[in-house]
Image (tube, rainbow, N blue to C red; front, top):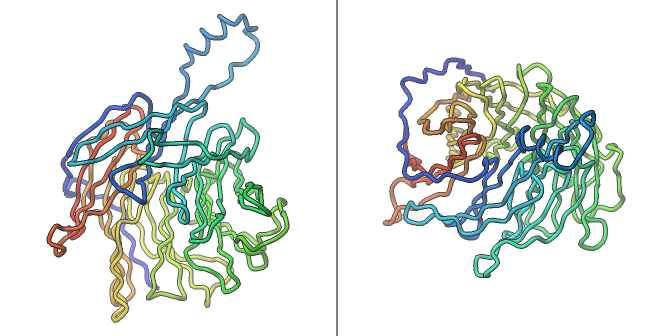
Length: 414
């Protein structure tokens, strides 16, 4: 595996994508997910922190002692939108007593989605677009102390139900939730992974022969970490309740690759590279990187930086749009949607040449946002005649100006 590094943004030469339509929200958007069963619908989670003036007013009205520190109050909502004929309409609003930091649909029960909350809960909902009450709450599990935020969550990639979920916490921990007996969720693993906030956790795309999957986490301590498990299968057949972290045989922290907090991790499943795992990371250091792990050469989790690109803003989330994998000559091409905080959203081309050299190119940028772009997602569009370029409809959001934008990009753009 060879490396090609490019630390220049060269932003002025990148084409800008035109806005299709925009929608102003009541509260700041923090996360977004399209409905797997009908991509006309998508969920937006919001995060609202009560202003200091409001807290002082409420404190005075309640007669509380001024010496008692004010407790921060975070609230949020789940917003169901419909996207049809390039127009966005708000279908339902579900106000919640907590802020929402992440949302993902289940890979096995596609109507079920989970949200990460500011009160230490993971909450489960069902979306039924045939019902008059579209969103219904199913369950809630208290993962940690209510003062700790659940920052991200990831369903174990499995078509088997019931599922397993990994979450990352603001105290630097990662937690795995699963089932022992019956439908109730329980904590299976609790591990202190980082010294500061654990911004993101994801499952590996490579399954160990014994059925286990590694976890990857990124923290505000600039550490990218792989947590391997070779003795404890995190699946529905596993027994025992191990919450002391020993169910992960070992963790391999990488403290050198990133110069700031690790905020995004995207495993790339590439069939033509069965011995290698390729991962993209995003960081507060404004770079996106392609990292490679060769299990045969380095089973202890050491990675190699294959490519690097400065994007001009902290890379908060990464979304895979599509992959072309040529098993005949080893050439690989991927398109990735990056949420780049104050630099807006960008569409990346990640390429591996026949010679094995990786490069990252910014194909286009969307710069209509006036504050932090934390959340973006996309739905594929199939050409009417069934041939030609597929066009993706992207929805990106910005936090402080509470803006939701719709725009399009052709997958064949070079």
